[in-house]
Length: 584
Image (cartoon, rainbow, N blue to C red; front, side, top):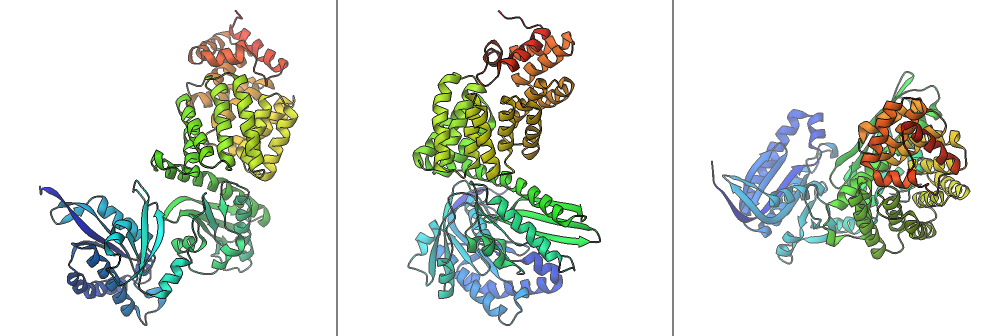
């Protein structure tokens, strides 16, 4: 086995943009054209001191002893490609994308490995066709030494690279400079453009249906205050054009692009949609919908709603992963907020304490951002109600101030109204809680927590039967969300309250399979089985509830929670007594 050593090297990574499309159109011609491109490039590479390390399909990795040589070679390769493409139809042109970095590499025989190579490859991945992207380390070495223009693209997050890197684009023409200066900065929150859905059917009238889906999705996503959504007029300028998702994202200044297509066959219609993270080209989410076209407008509404419901959580998950990759000492307000959400979603006492820390950091970094206040309010309320780390009375005072501040800062933030609704619910203010929940639902009809808040408020107003539907809707809208266990708790409690004991047993067993250590489920299970007269099963569930959650049992059984009516509390105690519980 060859020994492994290290050395400093300049690395150039390049590939052909749209190579798969070219191969699909003309496999033999594409292979021959690529061979010719490479044969003309070999002397240029040698002239600048480059060594071809390896080729992979349309890609090539080249090592240089000098980063100046690497960048000059990159510029030369682009000029060669432009000359060869002269007179070639646009759809048949071979255009290089190139990344250059200087860094430490591992030498294993004739191969080079390590982060230096990976960074060069990721820089190539974010370069445009005919473009060159270089790292800040490379830029410092070539500034003033290469006859080219450089544009600072700012810090970029590169796939599988731990820290953001400052990237520069290299060009040699005024046109390149103009296109660079036209780039829009990314907003400080997740940004998305919804492109017109392509009509793949032979019927022109389906164009209206395709446009309607895209328009509905834009309208629905615009209701999420956590998203920056490009307006229809800008997105639809790409209608009927073959587009490069990365280029669209750069031109519109967004991180995510949703694209889709529609195909009709007989009385059936198929709609596909995919969400792409433009920086990496990764598909964050994709789905296909096959429907009967009985009522075209009903189908349009159904698909638009389904896509919208799926997109927001998918983006939230990616954003949290992005924030978790940042070093803790280098967080901005949005990243600190995302970290807080991540810990809050883990639903443990330790994570909840960390969530409080990050939400407080969010407020310190940006006192005008509503998300920090509502996040901290949630974490404080959970510290009492879920983890029994504080008294309910202590938490209610501070959480109320935070929730009201969130609404005051951003009255269009549906999540802020939900947070205030639950605080009012815990205060025993059913009408106030319902009013805030309804405001949240009006702002964001697909927000799962808004439906959950509606259900909680209705139950508090002695409308328990009515509260079942919104609670079930909440679970259906967000079946994997961070507050799912709370939604299940609410549903189980309501089933008990309306006397649906047999159904409660089925739901409780489902919850226990997912979370066998969740005390409230066993408490309600014991009460329900006690009401059914199955004393042995009831006693076993009761013992389990006390064993795994003595503090929870004391808070909700020995004492009455402020938001429970005397009638509901006595009903629960009745079932627990039948299960064998005795007041001490």
